[in-house]
Length: 253
Ligand code: ZN
Ligand code: FE
Image (cartoon, rainbow, N blue to C red; front, side, top):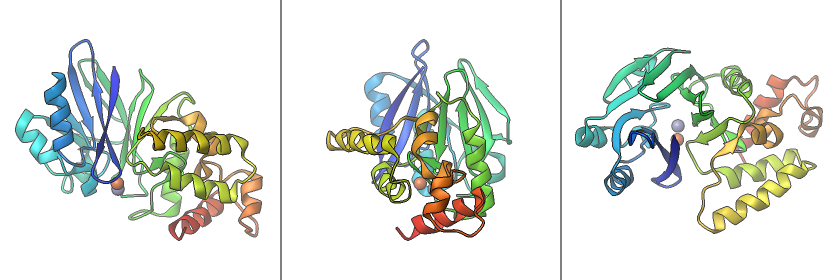
């Protein structure tokens, strides 16, 4: 199984999960159809499924045209069947979806939207997090509560550390500037920032990251850390209160 990163729109990433034994493939969150179709045409793969993490346009914009061209089946959250266009296969929280060598468990992770899910390909330890967990950041809370987003991120924190994280946008550089303000002694973060800047300068994605790296450097996964709680000056801080404050600060960063 390999994953191809396909940049879409301004700063979105769509991902092709390709089974090299069968040439069958799934695409995660096609924000637009053209880059996906051109990759499929040039690489002789058989695109079978579209997997959508949530209903926002920059994640589903390519659904219709891709489905029309390849008769691809669209897989998404049951609770969002009215909002995800062309949905064929409806999944519930913690359901396992399987087709030939593809096997993923989905988790309902509300906060960014009320119907957001992630796809965990647990055999290969690949996690597609959409706009919930970014590298060194997390999504804005549009439809949920702080607590929902906090719980969704905590669920992701429980996956194996070596899990590879594939998120919906290239926001890493801007995210890292925010982390550095409130976690300024984090040496791993500082060297990661330099590493990421070099990648971006060469036109390379900073994705995938790993859960281990995110646990060490992503401030939104570190709201239980005393130094971060101190740096944002809350009375009687808890992890949830710290997370909520950080989310507000980031919205205005
Ligand atoms: Zn979104
Ligand atoms: Fe998005």
